[in-house]
Image (cartoon, rainbow, N blue to C red; front, side, top):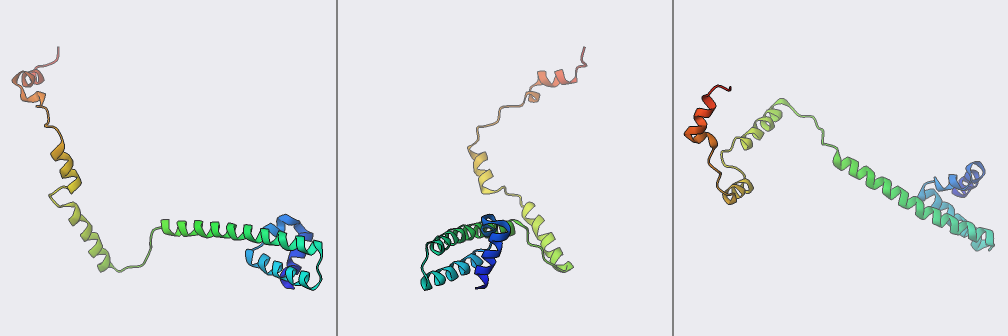
Length: 138
């Protein structure tokens, strides 16, 4: 009868808000014990208590599931940190620049430039523009 006693003590100390803060496992055990007592001697207060504990257990399970989901998201978002030696570091450190040094652009960039309109001739290419650049400003 330990879980049911904990429910009773929590009711005395903090009321139903204290019961709502309990774990789903504790509430499930307490609800099971209340049902056993109700089966031995049926009463309306025990039936109401069993129903209320079941509702609070379902709410506690949902709260705990949300907490697990948040912790899993946090764990997935955090980078992996592990120890390594210098040779492994050098291997990974020198492997990355090779991919950046390749002469051919990625396929998506090459495709975009192939479909782009021809560039307009530069203003500096005309002789008038070249002489205008070399003249001092008045």
